Image (cartoon, rainbow, N blue to C red; front, side, top):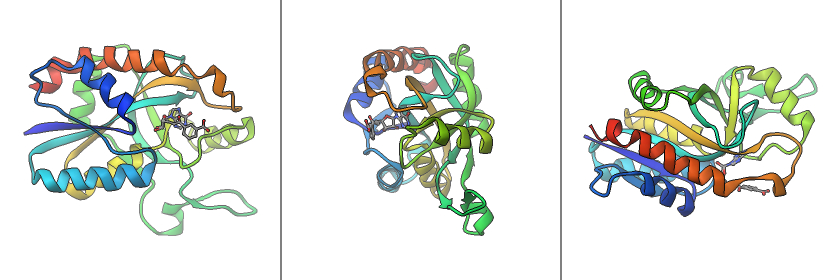
Amino acid sequence: MGLLIVTAVAAEAEAVLKGLAPDSSIAVVPVGVGMAAAAAGTAKLLTLADGRYRGVISAGIGGGIGVPLGATVLAAHAIAGDLGADSAEGFIALDELGFGTTVYKADQKLLTSLREALPEAVVGDVLTMNTVTGTAARLAGLVERYPAAVAESMEGYGVACAAAQAQVAFAELRTISNTVGPRDRDAWRIKDALEALTKATQMLSTSLSS
Ligand SMILES: O=C(O)c1cccc(C(=O)CC[C@H]2O[C@@H](n3cnc4c(=O)[nH]cnc43)[C@H](O)[C@@H]2O)c1
């Protein structure tokens, strides 16, 4: 059974494909930006594949939380960081409201093979945000709620949700394009992060194909 790598945008898919061997059996598909597009796109691909994939990886660039630009992050958990309710007492996560889970654990076997191929990758929780964090206050709230968070993306939780429903393994890999915090779009290093994504995929290529 093969592996599926889903990215948000075409540039991320191209960076991943550049790192894979030309005859790789791994499918790479861009499914759109954000949790909803990621979940719907991944669910569609898994359904059409009818059991052909043993696992799905949400891959792309991401914002770092205490992790330097260009570094590679592997998710221990994909957490929906802003899915819930606001209140005078603070944020109430969907779990506390009794409507499901905001946390998906990465498949341990898949995560182990990614860690072995990428020994320098930082492993920690990756937050999936509907709104890219853009203030120090919002970052402080996230860090307080999720002390093990090392990065932020907009898709991981959506991909994990689709994977869980299809009963296939899930993992998330991000290369860091920007530091999460006060918005400074000029400081984003997207090209470097895409190059890091190609490098990471190159290192993974052999172990993932087997
Ligand atoms: O400049 C903006 O305001 C803006 C608003 C929405 C999306 C973007 C992107 O460029 C996001 C593209 C893509 O990158 C991932 N990403 C990268 N850094 C972060 C981050 O700090 N927080 C959340 N997601 C991030 C994300 O997965 C998107 O797919 C720009």
